[in-house]
Length: 376
Image 1 (cartoon, rainbow, N blue to C red):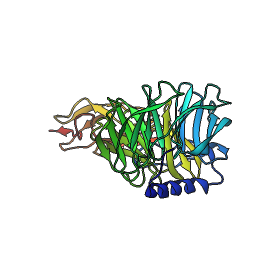
Image 2: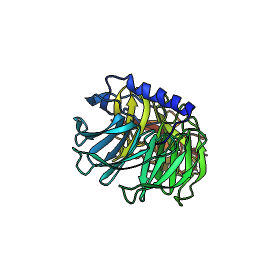
Image 3: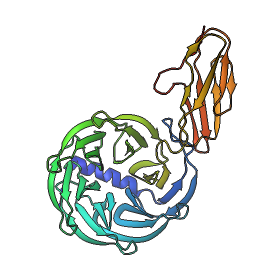
Image 4: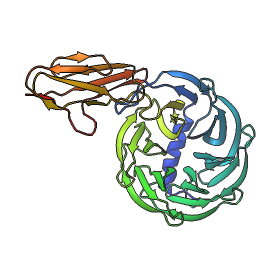
């Protein structure tokens, strides 16, 4: 059995209490107004009441939720009508969960890593376990290994090639308490409490090494990775969206202000699934998918007046309306307008695009900096 440092145990109790006081939690499905850096709030479209979720993993038509002393299986084939279909009581506090194939891997606090057979979602059953030296809070699975965020035990790398007999093969300390972990492209991304996001090279699972980091606003509890972004559940600061295209130099690009306390996060099928203490399981589109992203190009940058410029909309995520401002009091609502400049000057053009998911504005010509048209 693992052990908890006194300070870590205090944080653990804090988190456990924050989960326990929410008596009306469950599965809440929502759709955001937008997915941009200014954040968003969402109207609910469905809810499964009951339970206190701390983390969630999604595979196929099922969400696997770590909730206090229980591991729960929820059918999400119809997001508007989620339904619990199975559960398994774990011996510790089920804080983290990952799913891969026929198995779910539960980070069970002082009880370490628990391996659960989910081949029958209605009847999950434990088949193996491994004690970790700290308090197992989060877990990710890749390439025959389970990567466990083990509190003050840092990152633990466990060989799960035989799910019934897992065995530790490597480890890496982190500066604070490792709560959550995601793995992608040869890197482990750690939600490290007050240490924010930590990036660890795991190309050699037996010798992981730290390569990058980024501080977050509060207490980084969980992390998921998809399409070059890390999604960090940052407690009261909601979900932070971090560009990890360069793992050694991550940078925040957006956030969602969630209704409760963001604790666990997963990404699948273009959606972000959030275990949000006080509300339940919140679902919203992946970053960039909730609304359009504005972009455009122009046929000319300068010339003699009168100068006619053809503008081409390059926006993504299916905008349905366009609003152009050409910098000389001229406007248009066409998707691909043309505009004639009659006077000498410098003009900055902006485009606002919208759809049911939100809106976005840009006044930068893709790849060329601020667009200016100089009729001379």
